[in-house]
Amino acid sequence: MACGFRRSIAGQLSRVLDLPLENLIKSISAVPISKKEEVADFQLSVDSLLDNNSDRLRTDTQVQAKRLAEKLRCDMVVSEIRAGQGTVNFKINRELLTKTVLQQVIEDGSKYGLKSELFSGVPKQKVVVEFSSPNVAKKFHVGHLRSTIIGNFIANLKEALGHEVTRINYLGDWGMQFGLLGTGFQLFGYEEKLQSNPLQHLFEVYVQVNKEAADDKTVAKSAREFFHRLETGNMQALSLWQKFRDLSIEEYIRIYKRLGIYFDEYSGESFYREKSQEVLKLLDSKGLLLKTIKGTAVVDLSGNDDPSSICTVMRSDGTSLYTTRDIAAAIDRMDKYNFDAMIYVTDKGQKKHFQQVFQILKTMGYDWAERCHHVPFGVVQGMKTRRGEVTFLEDVLNEIQLRMLQNMASIKTTKELENPQETAEKVGLAALIIQDFKGLLLSDYQFSWDRVFQSRGDTGVFLQYTHARLHSLEETFGCGYLNDFNMACLQEPQSVSILQHLLRFDEVLYRSSLDLQPKHIVSYLLTLSHLAAVAHRTLQIKHSPPEVSGARLHLFKAVRSVLANGMKLLGITPVCRM
Image (cartoon, rainbow, N blue to C red):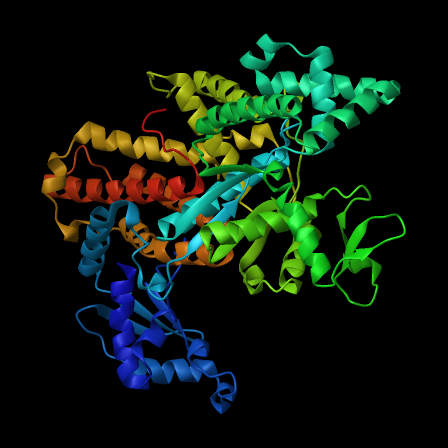
């Protein structure tokens, strides 16, 4: 694998430069492939070796690179060494490159790229990821969808790297909305509708009671009284609330299953209604709680009455707020999981909220607040189903399935499928995820169903099509060819480009692990699919000698394996036929 080659190159550099080998490994990077010219396999940037304060920086790096290249020698691993623009470039022995990469991909399977020395110094951690977090009885808007797929990617990546991950869905399951919902259900609710489609029925009740409360003060008063009964622990009110919550979670689990997503814990604001009172007492005991004229309680994070740094933590009636409950939840999770990192995946509109939560925790004396991180994402505009604005996640999934089925029906190459609905959903989800993950997570973007479902170009449909086509090759030619192949048969430019690209997979994973951006993996997989498409057209298997066919089949099998690994990290289930 790449790290074996890196180590070999670093070993020679270590002797020449008199620097520790381990310090050099991360300075040696695989070179991205180029359509215009044949490139080296690895590159060392001379700048990365020089101390920032070094006088040597004043010397032209081009000269430095040339001098260093002249001191290095080719060996069994490296067949060519050349100086570039401030770089030293290394070409690996072609047969060794072929043998090592293909062998490693097959041997490591789903762990290919993850065993790299790039990750050797990374300690294994306990990581909590909070994502999705819809509000019971309210719209599951597009922000929740983004949080769901981004959080799932982060959890998948952390897990793949060997960390112990806990996935938490922190539901909006408390607050005045449940006063309205309890009153609304008593007025307009039907038990059968609640059992058959809880999310839809609770939403309908919520919309109806909101309209009534706006016109009828007695309904609004009943809602406040119902919520007060909830807050004071009235068994009848709590029983109805618990039923709403349990049925909603059952429905969420069923829908998340369609997405291939699961959670280790369904938590919620309701868990912390009592513990948030303990937070308020603790803040008060530390002299951090300030009462306002209106009767609310605030924390001044600036210490000098700066209005922009004042955070309200208690209503005038003594009840807690979202911020207080988030602080209580963080403390509880630290006690429960003793995490090394906790990641919150929400839209960028909550950036200030989390800054305040983390700062209050730190001010309270919890140094571990530095282990808490907010991963913000941008706004998606224009996601509508044929029924109108998105109300529920299931609306999106049904729309994906319907549109993809229509697309598949119109394409002549579509195979006969055992379960076309299931395939359509998996391909459609891939399309949605790739569209979302192509850019920086923080970027806003305009959603387009037409762009999502394009079968050509850089789309999720293209990734699934490539995987299915490569799987079909293995099915057509069987395993016989895999036992009979010659490494020397893979010297064509198309083969070498694929092998060079496979070398880079560990670096791409490493980059995503540092900034938690899926776009690096997306870009890598799309390039891999384009390279495979070119190779599939030019490198024939059917009419070639057995050893050539075997070698090419091995190459395509390696591509499919790495493609599947990357897709799974992104939260995509690869299809074998489409």
